Image (cartoon, rainbow over all chains, first blue to last red; front, side):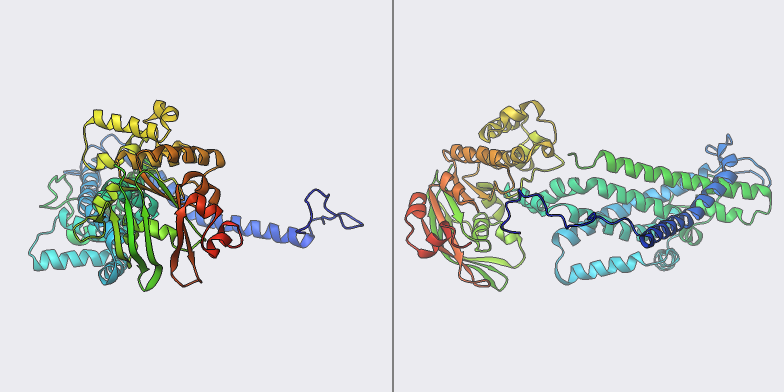
Length: 304
Length: 258
């Protein structure tokens, strides 16, 4: 082969075509595999669609009612198809927001440490602890906050305590995601920056983090979406309230999961109505967050 | 501008591994010196010790002296950051900052060092781009991202970025290896221009390139895998390519190995 000039026509074996027709055995296998894969896909999709159809079907009436987004359940009788859940929406959003305000800086700083500075035992321990934290069930996080901040430090049950538990749940997600994003930033960019005489901290702040920004923001929004539906912390750490409470540091505060849980004990049909409405509202909020995340990642993606 | 570089008894290690042994050489101001040699002989390693980029790799260290106009860049009193401001570097693959526009890329070194004066930044931007022979091609789209340029343009953008901080020495680590012949020619012409103002050290795998652009050529080699690399011979480029003193150099440049 090495001596041919490449100009000769390829030699064809004498007698009959070179290519054989597709054998029946392979046709059958191909069909079978296709059917199996499609079936597996359908099995995975059916429950998803089912849940969505059920929640939308039963909840749409509630969320389309005039008062749903603008009123609380204050003074509304259990059997009454009136009132709204804005007190619970506010609770869900403020608890998640407070959690993000605490978890995002700590999480990003920890990821920067692990990727840019971490060597040796401390980094390994930190990384290991993050893995453990990622495996902590939400009820354990909630009970830990109760034990540490309420029993020992003498705090009171409030929305802020819920936020603290959510911080524990968000942190590993934010750290791991940011870590991934920082590792995706090519070392060549860091070196290019060092070669200009830019110190390491400035390189991280002005070159590395901006390059990883969109992925990091997406990760934060996904983490937020995840913790919004957490129920254990709100059950353990704050009392339910039918009316709005703007103060996350004192008093009872509703949130969507907590409202759903408390309406479970409402025997009237209106209870069901509120639960499905709240479920659909929660799904919508989370969906908006995820859409927001994908918009952010599209618009601030590294421009080519 | 344009200072002289001297290496005295330089030994380079990665942890326990002795990467390069006993390098002694001098680079005159306003000249081009090229490092040639087979892969793994340590020429890039030596280049990276010249602006202390080498120490970004954990466990790496340098013995001996690297003098810039007589001042040891490894002295306890010299800060790596200020060394790198004085000795700029262009890398093998073009690496413009992806989040920045062409203008911001060029003046990144100044901007991140705290220069705010917009007029001055614009001036430096234009001068550097002209210096890198890129001004005509990008002057209309300075606000577009640097990643949108062609490979050759990106590399010239990186050169503009490196000269914008006005270093005394410019190191180039195989700056043309990722480029097509036309872009390579553009960069080689540029090196010839830059020689008027800068001391240039370039690593290249392309011996014709070394012959074309450099005044002085250093040939590095290693005896065997696992042994440290050595500087075999350094001389005027013409002498190295026509009448080398060492047999190994002649073997390498005539293509007998490497």
